Length: 240
Image (cartoon, rainbow, N blue to C red; front, side, top):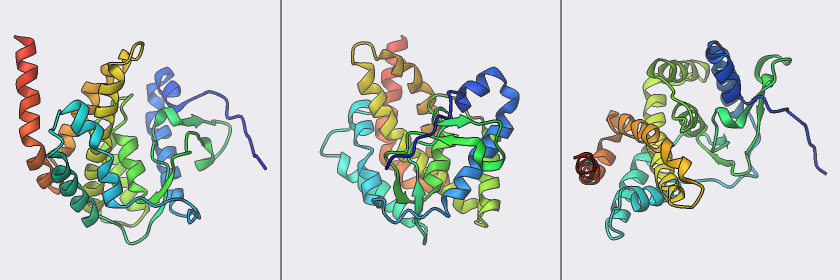
């Protein structure tokens, strides 16, 4: 049995392009969907452990930072340990790629039903704050500090969690996601007709740099510092 519904093509991203003033309303609707995820029966989904998630940064270490293969396991272990420390007591649905290009604005509906959701085939059982990190570190759209802080605050309030605990998890999941994205976009940028992905790299790198400065990311930042510095030196050389 297959249930199919045509949501149309009014992506949140397109709606925001037409009218930036919708930003608050659309992001509030996206946040309402995230809160609802916690109530979904997701027991049939595969779970993702801290080790699983940490292993997924290999493309970034390899293709973007050029970390020698012998050094990669140590960085992965440090990130896995940081993610393990923030593991929530209760796991639920995680979309995995939750951002404005995978949300469709259904303006004629009410409440959370105004968010049509696509591209959920990689969903897993985990911490739903992973999706909050995806929303506020959107590779295809600048998400400002004020909006990011508002989303963290509102999610913490709606789910009755500590603001600091939510912020810690957003930062670490943001690091995990954006290390992986940097590697994939760098790799794709070398493929014929896919160089457009390279234009997104500076935004993703800015998100990564910001999250690495979060207190919860101290050990991860220390492990990556030599490669951050090498990348900075290479960039200065290219400019001179």
